[in-house]
Each structure stands twice: as C-alpha cells, then as structure tokens.
Image 1 (cartoon, rainbow, N blue to C red):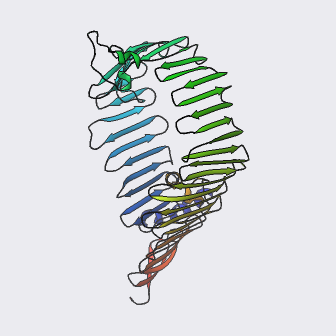
Image 2 (image 1 turned 60 degrees about the vertical axis):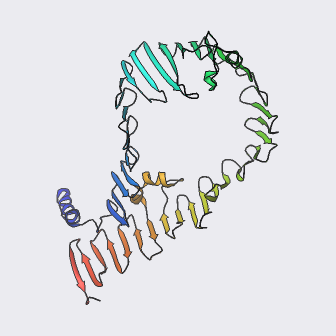
Amino acid sequence: MIRLRLGILSLLLLPAACTAPPERPLSPVYDRHERGDRTTVAVRPFYWRDEGPDGTKVNVFGPLIRWRENDAYRRFFAFPNVFYSARKDDPRWSFMFFPLLFLGHDDFLVFPLAGVARGLLGIHELKLYTPLYARTKSVRRPGKTPVVFITHHVLWPILAWGSDDRPHGRRKFRVWPFYGRSTRGAVAHEEVESTDVDGGSEKDNANEERSGFVLWPFYTWRKGKERDEFFVFPFYGRKTTPTREETTVMFPFYHRVEDHLSGFRDVALWPFYRRAGGTDQGEIRRLWPFYQYVRAGTSTNEFKAWPFWRRRYIETDREFARHTYFVPFYKRIDRVSKHDGRRHRKTTVWPFARVENYADGTREIAVPVLLPHDGPKYREVAETVGPLVRLYHRRAQPNGDRETSILFGLIQNRRKGANKKTHILGGLLGWGRQDGQRYFRFLWALRLRLGKRA
C-alpha cells in the first residue's frame, strides 16, 4: 500500500517536473523571476542564483558555498576552508584551502612544510623553507626610495630577528614571550635626508623610536622624540605626547584621555560610566545599562535599557538616515536622499512581518520574517530557504506589476502589464489572461481558453 501511494504521488508530480516551463514555477521548490534585466532562479533549499547588470551571485546550501562575479572580479567561497579570488584586469589570482594550501599566479605554499606566498594574511611575501624556518618581507615607500624590511623566523613565533639594512633604520629582535626589542629610525617615519659618510644623520638619531617587551604582555614600552609610553599589565599604563596624555589603571576598568590641542577629554569607568567631550566634533555620555548617547559630527547613536532600545541618526554626503530598534523584535529604517529627496522606508516586526517601501516606489510585504536582521546581504542567504517558511509575500512595483505568494508559494498571483495569472500548486489549477486571452489551467499541462481574444 505504501509503494502504491508513492507511485501515485510520483505520477502526480511528474507533469509538474517535466512540463512546467520557466514562466510556470513549482514553488516553493522551484521558482524563477524576471524583473527587467535581472533574473533570479531558486531550487530550494539547495540552490539560488541572481543575475543582473551588477554581476552574478550564486548560493548553494545557503551561505556554505558562494560564487560572486562582476566586471571586476570572480570569487568563490566554500565555508570554512576554500577561497578563490581573481581580478579580470590582473593576471594574478589566489586559491586557498585553509590552513594547508595556498596557490597563486606565481605562488605555491604547503603549510607548514615549504613554499612561497605573496599577500597572504597581509604579508607582502612569505617564504617557508621548513617547518622550523620562515622569512617574511614587507615593503614601504617613503618618498621615492622603497624600504624593504626582512624578518627571519625560527620556530615561529618564538625566535625572530629582522632589519631593513639601512643605518638608523628599522631593527627587530624577539625571543617570545621573554624579551623583544624593536627600533624604528627616520626611514620608518618616511623622512629621508642627506646622510654623512657613515650613512646616518643627526635627524635620523633624533627621530629614532624604540619599543619592546619583557614577559609579554606584562611589561611593554615605547619611547621616541615625541612619544613616551609604558604599560605594566593590567595594573598601570601611561602614554604621553606633546599634545596628548592617556592613563590606564586596572585595565580595562579605568581609562582617561586628554587632548591639549583640541580640548577633548575622555574619562571612562568601564563598562558603567563614560563621559567624553570638549569639542564640537563629538561627545559621549554613558550610564550603563540605563542610557548612552554618542555624537560624532552631526550623527548620533543612543540606547536606553541596553540592549533593547536603540536609535541612530546618520548623516552622510548622500543621505540622512534614522534607525530605531527594539532588539530583536522591532526595527524601523528611514532614509532620505539628499540628491533627489527620494525616501526608503522599512519596518520589521520579527518574526511576524516586514514592510518595505523602496526609493523607486516598489512596495514589499513578507510574512513571516526568517532573520531578525534582514539587510540585503542577509537576505541573499535567507532567500535560499526563506520561501519554504513564508506564508505571504507581495511585491508591487510603481508601473502596476505585482507578484503575490501565499502559503509557501502554493498559491501564486502575478501581473505584468495586461497579463495576469493565478496558479495553485504550481499549475494543478490556474487561471489568468495572456495577450488578451483568458484561460483556465489544470493538471499542470492542460490549458483551456475561455472567451474570445480581446
């Protein structure tokens, strides 16, 4: 009996799988949308593809596998190990199987055995000869003369020493965590002068900066012409420059900053109290967890009864935005363009509904909402599985086109220009009007015309 029922079910689904063309989707499993020059295809919950003028985006199993491509680059991610990136205007490319393998245009590194890699983890060049020894190279360009700093590592991070091979330049030595010392001369500060016979100058010596540690991180220090600082972790630290003083006591509980040049003053008793201000550029008032107010220029950020209620006013060169949150249940965003005055509004009551009015006049309603934070990046991930749990979704454009999905996409209504169609179970039953001709559809493949062509 069970086999008979499965056989009947397969026969019922076969017409939908074989005869449903792209414009007749079997939602919520399969769906295809075409809006102008943008096409979106979804085979839920496995596959989602969005293609438009700004490029192509593909998600496989939500965020686990992603492909991104546009006019500038190609990128592939397979969480958590695989990463590939290549720019179309540059022959260089990179592939990483973290943390074992790194390949590139002219790079090959098998960690921790041997190889060479450029640009890995922000390092200009890394050469690994054995698991015991490695050499890194960084390049700086003060003025017109490049400065190359080479560091040798033995049993990283225990023993390291490096130099840029310049008199009064940069030097480094470390036996971690017992002792370390570093010297930065004038070259490191991008100051180049004529030198004497020995290759140095008086200004080089005057601008030299030294830093180091003993039993890291318990004692660290840095000293130069315009800087003097030390820290005995976590008890006491002090930093002094000609215009600024900072004091830390029992890190991170007490911190005090005073800027003599601008008049800015900041006193914090973390995390309960903070008071900062003294300039027109910004101020901070905090009495945690009851209240906090932060102003930076003309933008503000405040909360009451942390972490529940929060409000932000953000002004940029392009727009003015207001954000209101009652975490995690309520969010409202209102943006106004300074260029043309167009407004973008979004209200989310999680997990019940989201109502969004776009700047171009498009209005969208979704019930329920899968994620508390459903910005564009998060929506790309949720779109792979979102319609499987969506009871109602409606998108109406200012030209009159609209799309409505009810009960996980089992009931759909679409209107584009004078054409209309309503489908139940992807076409088990359906009716509509196409090119002035009304029709009735059943059993997915059978279609009956009604009335005369208008």
